[in-house]
Length: 450
Image (tube, rainbow, N blue to C red; front, side, top):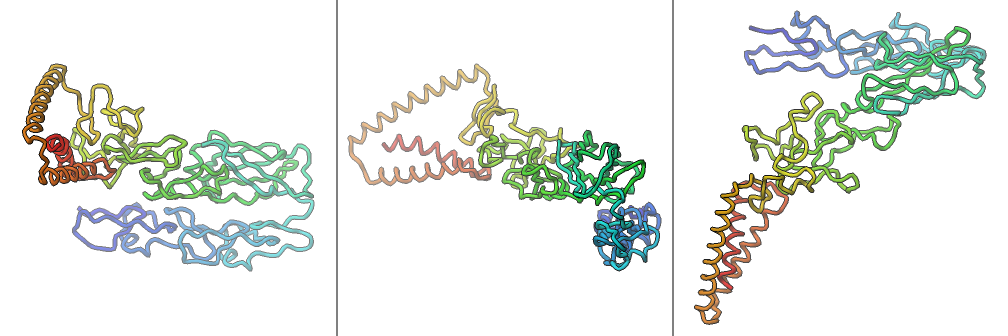
């Protein structure tokens, strides 16, 4: 059965391929929300509409809207349009009613006489008008709290008992009546802390505007604060949000992901975890993550470099683990259960495990009886080895032949090659096995030659 294209997507091809997916509309465009009932709205990219002159982008499912008072838009046919502020000492009264009144900068009317206005004003004010808060600024107070500050012009008079209305919203245009915060507080000293916000401020932008109230009369709102960089802006696999340098959100930025760091999705520095094969370094270390000698000992987020190289007991690939807020329980971050979490780079075996070979792999310890048998067998083999070694040493009568030198050099070379297994390289398992065999042969051979 053919299915209609979902809202926000289009599909220009007629096809029989059940795996062919629909294409998302470009960011910053809106589309007719018919719930996919009419294919004419979903059969080409031009169905994803751009805002015309005098309008600005609202949401992807609602038509563009006429600019608000004090703003105009003269670009048109561009994605993600925002209306521009009228210049200082001009005003534009129409508030989202007549598009032609917002189509060019000359729609902004110059203030007359000694009246004036800030950028984006809907009317000019005279010296005795209600003062407009200036320099509205937000700083991080906590992950879910903002410190809002503002001031007034030097010659502004703020009567005693005056208040300000502070509004916070995730909608820059404040069209959503469900405001995050709508507070009335004294106009001075000019600070307010908005706590218990719905979302962390490193994940969500909160826009702020303020207006003054004098004798129950409200002035115009201040200029709305600007957007800052948040986690989803750095959602590629190669960057994370760095907000450690300043509490001013406008100074936050995306930074390249460190080697061994998992940066898929919205990630900030504090919450970053290592990828599979890497472990976290101490806070005062020069690097954030370091490679583990035995990669499967260190569990973490997806690491494409090790896909298909290791398997869990259930057959799953530990290097493909996706870490996010919803599925965080699906991934173990830290050392594998066979290794001690308090060890450096997960290099020590946990209780009940022991090193299996030179690779750093930890296996379950044998039963006590098995250990005893191995010890006795080892003792017997060692005694036999000593007897053979003494016999070979006495049999040549102290004569050194040229073949002994060649053999010694060859064994030294094999021993050097066996050291390659200690390098932090994801060798195929067959190479690791060859290196280990070479190391064992070298140790025994050197005893026989010497």
